[in-house]
Length: 116
Length: 113
Image 1: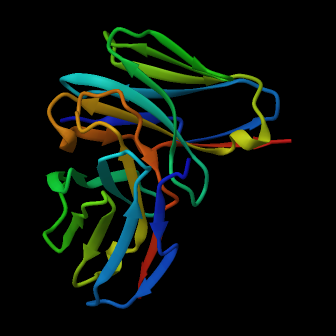
Image 2: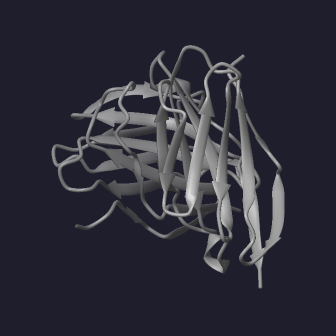
């Protein structure tokens, strides 16, 4: 069974540009989560999509947005990039949309975004 | 304020030795607690998920404990191997919705030969 995949592996942008990151969940999973992991910091929750809908978002500005497609893959867009957006962006998927669920989130390898 | 604190921040042990990582949380209401292992440059991998009623859960050489009264959890690694070198992240999920997924900063473990 293929795991969660993310593309690209690395992305280099300059300040003010836009970045698009992509995630494909494990087959059969309907929920996709996005996290930001800045260097030396813990994981920060960004967005949660399930069945094509945004279910919740973390404390990030509106220039962080995304969507989930009918095949449950997802895209994270970051507009007007700032230097502090440089981080590892991780995508995870799970089979359950319940926040009370004990279902495991399976993480992808991440996209390392560098903003110059 | 909902917080998850892990200790120590980093730890160096010799191959074959045991170690215990700590996680204290102030998250309420509590749903479940998870331990993840994250190798450098990779996504986290789930080790254990513990609900309120579970005190101990093992996954191979990893054993997690949970004391819901004192809001403490520990991850014990037995007979460490070089491949155990990674960051170990404690995550607490509150019952208040997914924006209540609270991550600890992690403990960076280095196992030396």
